[in-house]
Length: 525
Image 1 (cartoon, rainbow, N blue to C red):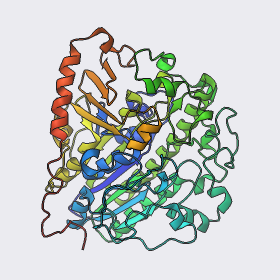
Image 2: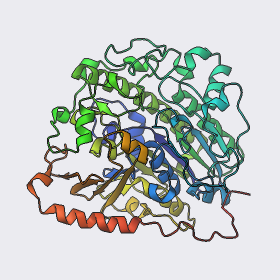
Image 3: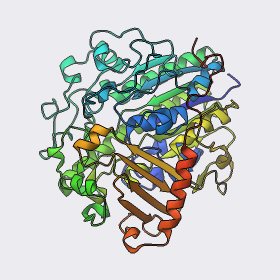
Image 4: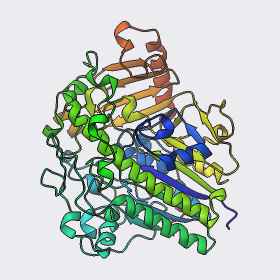
């Protein structure tokens, strides 16, 4: 066994903090994640740095805010030479692999964002084709040659898409096992093949193939293969086990689709919120039925109680399938004798409104549903506990580096959570800053504000956008965020504006453009 601790970073996509048993959900069944939580530190107050896929995934990898690493929306890729905690680990002798969803490049997002009509800054230092590794077209015939270094990962096996659609390395893997190609390449529209489809929204349906071909099985098995290989060679490893679910389309395969009865699903108390004082774009989203989305990822209203029950039931099926996969991987660690020397982290890139405040999906809706995520860190020789102190996605990178006794690098803006792992009373931050930006063209063509900033303390959430619209909630007295305190000119408003000003200054990037050490980035030859 290697003396260095192994790292298993388990990630889901669009997974609310309260959609796991260990965070108090009595309906969804997640025994394996609950077992992991019972052995580690549960962060009950963990938040994203950005509530959109690519920006927050890049933040998790780099330990930097989106405005620092440059991926502010799903329409641009992470700089090929960005430093990451994975590159630090690889330079220290770790084997590194990304198994499943990456979304560090905008390949799968090309058709779901407003076209950029112009030309940005010229970047001539990137190698040719550097941002095409997540283009699904590359994998339609046979897997292309992978890069020797993908942001620090020496090995990538990508599941690029969502729902029932299968692309990336995942496609070739499923075809090799006998899957039907036409069923795998399901379009993201009402013509997608499937069964038991909701009559209100095409995105809720049963996948048209056996569960053994689904992304959750792919990610589970490829993670197990990597761990087995490293164990046999007695090499330290870091695996990013990244499940594309429970992101919509909400289309788990049988038997997971029917795990819950839609009529029995508890619905959020806030779903009839009139949003009287809310920003205008939220009211516009709320009026839009999911069947009338601009495209398959666009924010919208929840439709109806009937549709919401269907969506929640199918989502729980997706989560329970992921939980089954996590259980298989944890059992493997036990069998190989690796569990006591492995740091296991579980989190998600962002949440989903799932009917809260009459809203659905994610992006530009700064409520708890999209902003709060599950976070568990189970590290060797650390006690099992639950902590109330604030944590952020940006803290994962520095935490891993400190737990592995590796130096940080210039530009990391997160805080190591290691002190909180040993004491429930320790705090490493007094606020969390959340950014949310869209391209200028998108802001011109939609009601979405170009910039939104939120600061969260242990008591309050304050949000302000580029249109001057505000929200202020007391998260302790009003956890459902129903009473906007800005309407009453609450004294906490001034306090939180100061917190926001200080947070913005602290997040101002002083590392961009700084000289590199002999032009060398760890992990790159």
